[in-house]
Amino acid sequence: MKRKTIESFFNKADQHPSSQETSQVQDSPEQNEMPAQEPSQQPKIESITYERDPGKRPQIDEYPPNRRDQVRRFYISKGPFQPYMDEYPYAANANHRRRFQYHWFKKFPWLEFSPTSERAYCFPCFLFSTKPQGRCSSDTFTVKGFQNWKKVNNGKHCAFLTHMGQASTSAHSFAMLCYDNLKNSMGHPLQLALIAASREVGDVHNFFQDAIFIINIISGYTECKDELLAKQAKEISREVDLRELDTRRANQIGAFQKPEDIKWSSHYKSIHSLEKMFGGTVSVLRTLARDRLLSYHSRGDAGGCLKKLLSFDFVFILHIMKEIMMITDLLCHTLQQNSLDALNAAHLVSTTKQLLQKLRDNGWEPLMEQVTSFCLEHEVELPNMNSMYVDLTKSRDKRDNTTMEDHYRVDIFTSAVDRQLEQLNARYGN
Image 1 (cartoon, rainbow, N blue to C red):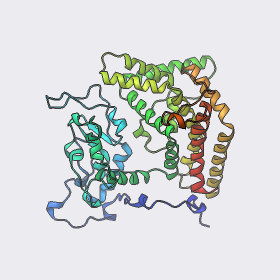
Image 2: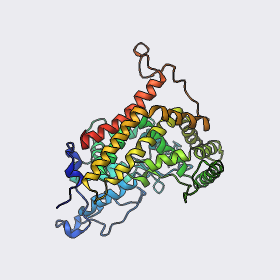
Image 3: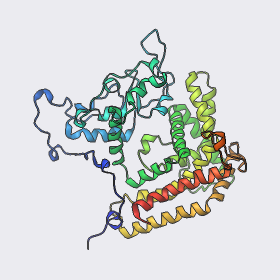
Image 4: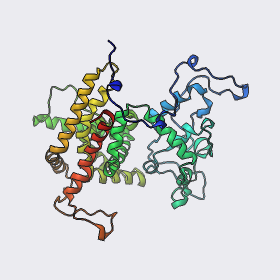
């Protein structure tokens, strides 16, 4: 009897046809032979080589056509090249002493910077600005690189905004569409859907951006990693003395995972690490913010991250996402096993939904106890949950009687859990 798979057992929701637009990787040239070309049109690269630095890497159209998707997948798995530098070099133009700023990466996630050419590039356009899609664009952000920093902070005339274009038919928008389609095909659909569902809640979306920014700051300094591990080891020793930690576990010291290391997984390990290393991270950011040997912008970035980290909003959502992803993490990884039996998979899906529903119905008070205890331990200011919540995006005459507790419980906690349940029900039925 032929074993059923998880895909055949459930009635899957309709898939967007756009997710199938990008062809799959062909590992063997014999499986997808290249059409005959004129000698002048032959690709310049015979063997596959990779270079993260956008100022040094070959262009996509220099690779054999049947291997380009393979190259794209490699670069997408690593993410945009966004090195953190203590001091970015000044532009060559002596009349305008300006330089690249690290915080631009947060505002424009597609941005890359090359220490070699000292110029900025567009990651999606590098991947998909070639002729097969029938679109073409300026090669400033793909081949030449951009360095006119004076034109960045220029309001609606900002060079980065101009590159993106206002219309959905712009070359950059088309490249972003192709990029998202291929990226989404690389991870397990449920993992990606659950992450995307969480980020649909505005506060949670901001949390993910802030968390990635903080991890990048810490990971950019080797001495910071050493200090962080030393502080974590000291904290583990204290917890062992207080018998708060299970000493039978072989390795208690963890480490941050960079976004490119976790690729498109459930992010549970990264969030769990950030919670466990919270105290050490705060200490390291304070050290960086006070370090006079660092540039003004580097100290400013560290200070901004510290302010975010010590906010109640950040701590609250950190604990919410840890609880949600702890429940969904096992399901996401289990469904990727080729040998998974359909009945066992159905049971696991059902159990996951039950746990999420239990979290929604009965998880608020235990969550608030954890958050309150965590805030007191790390000196994070607690808001008055009975006070009125003021949404600054609303005019004064449109404000309602929402309390702080209503905002955190309904607008964030309940909404985030509901998004997970909606995705599971949409994919595997009620």
